[in-house]
Image (cartoon, rainbow, N blue to C red):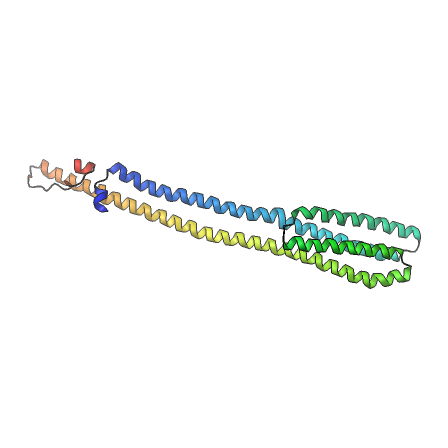
Length: 247
């Protein structure tokens, strides 16, 4: 390999050396861009999916709990006017809960999260049906239902809701962990590529020194001795086919 380098022109040697280093730098840049793009995708998933879903589901949990509280207030209201006032508040809260469900639906991913949200919707509709029966009952029966079957139904709904909230929380944490792992592996690869670039630069520099600088220094000494009329001076590099050999 050394002999083939000796036969290569100096310009080609320099060009090859810096082409190698340039290739490593370009490869490093493309790799870093690709990995950063992956990190950006993960961050976007957290920003546009897990975090908004968790926030909206938290609002849904608040509205549904408020709805159940208003049910008790309506049942204990002293007269028809007070009951109607509480019923109006319940209607407003129910609409807010429905809006929260409609808002979160486009953010849900297919698979486990979609299945969990379906359970939430089914549980909420079942509880609203129970509320319709609750309104038609006499006060004593209504209170018994509120504390019995309706409580059981509401607890099932809340369990489904907490499950989908936990899923989104876990998904957000997993995405953040994936981004951290991706950063760590990317850092290792970038450091490795930089070390490789440094080694290639060192090898290129050493090759230029050995292949160009030292022969020129030796030729300079030979020319000086020839100038001093020392005709026994050995001329080095006669077998080279590059510019030094031509000189």
